[in-house]
Length: 91
Image (tube, rainbow, N blue to C red; front, side, top):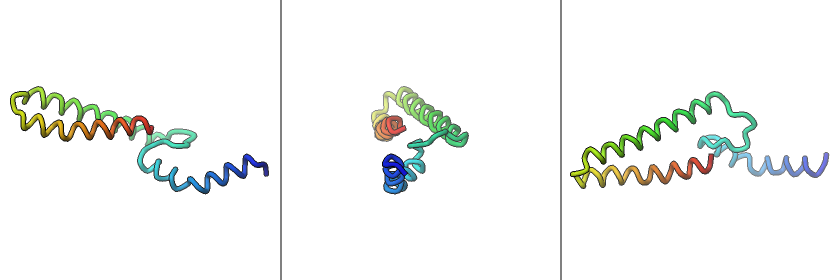
């Protein structure tokens, strides 16, 4: 057994739980092949996120005279955009 195999096995033992948590969160970390279920999940997340953002923008545009409604929509939209940026970069 070479030093590379020992190092790889040791790193697998240390980071196995972190890899598992990444996979639960939907980040394909150290995956050899993406499964069909994960591909369907990615498409669903992308479609849901885009439709939610479009819905918020249309809601703000339609109610542009109501400042309270705009602020309520933006209060939800801005954290959603921050989370999605982090999600895209982790993926």
